[in-house]
View 1 (cartoon, one colour):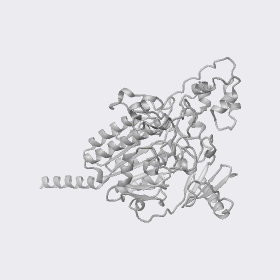
View 2: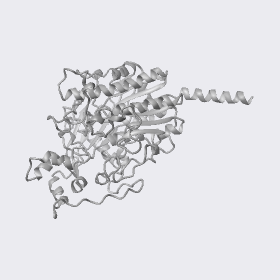
View 3: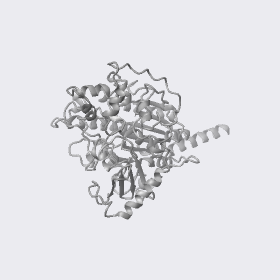
Length: 527
């Protein structure tokens, strides 16, 4: 009798696990909407992602919640706008975070998708880019395990590095090392493969967050072989994309091998639009030649080229195969509530997501979004298209505006996907209504006059280095040279401030310790 009861409970447990789908969330980095063969790119070879689109649905109106990485990723795992967590730009050193009104990391105590699934019986893993904190130096960031992950191996974050225990450990390095950049995603995929094999029938939630196509875009000569007739810098870029596509292929092949494909939700997306490329060899973003597919703006822009990115979903029997959805407006904060619905996990009491359950759209049913979307951008405005600091989308109308509300533009994306025809003057009523909605939304955000609360004490900061020349006022020079008062020096601002400009690019590079293309006050003073 007891034996029969035990066998019955084990059978029920196995049935429940079988009913719960696995989740594989593949998140690329700076991968533009146009960087897919199935999106019309004339040269790129992306056979595995093209296969994913043929076997699932390609949602072409998907948008992320911020045009750079850390806030975009925050939206995915919290289901809330990143501004609610005061995550406005990428996590950096403590002084830069303070200057941006940001904490040093996403608070691990907030409601998080991986923790909810772990508590529901899922085994959880995160392999690849992290960037929900910086890499440390003057901060002691929480480990991925504190966010609900059973296993993790990362870059741009704390804890185990992605090269540890991988087949390409000999190529280890950071994301700005040419050799390492060509193997980081391969290393992450090694861990992901081992993680799925070890799950052994238990439902899993797995993040595979790719390096491609973030700077440094790099490829070995062997990886460039599929593009013998392609000129640089496109050859290196295409090779990096195809290398990442091959890792997606490894994951799809593993799911087939283990008989898991039919019960696994596979999502491919990107954290923001493509990086702004630079025209000359040797420049930082020379190889960053991603495509927006004709959309206006790129990374750091609230125009669609900065936030409209690929979003492909495969779930056999639930998500129609071979479907291209050009009308369902989906957003990054929808991922959490939708995956909870798909896995049968309850929403926590008292939790208020900004996203909604979009399973109807996943299933190919008629779907119209019932609430508008909002954006806030607090980053630099180095490119012309980076000027919008707030945006709102209501259906197919989107409004972008400056913080002082002196510049406002309105577009009808149904008829003007490239955002070339401003309707703010010709449609004043809609413009006024959307402006009022943004103003009301701003009132729901944290008070930026209050400093962010640190999650735990920081390590003591290193003492500032002595000036190279006694009496040199580096802080004063920084303030004078920072002409747009954004708290950073661009290469142009730095060069204009020098009396001798011949070696300006190299000297600027020496100051730019985190290689993000700009110099903070901390980097300048503590060079």
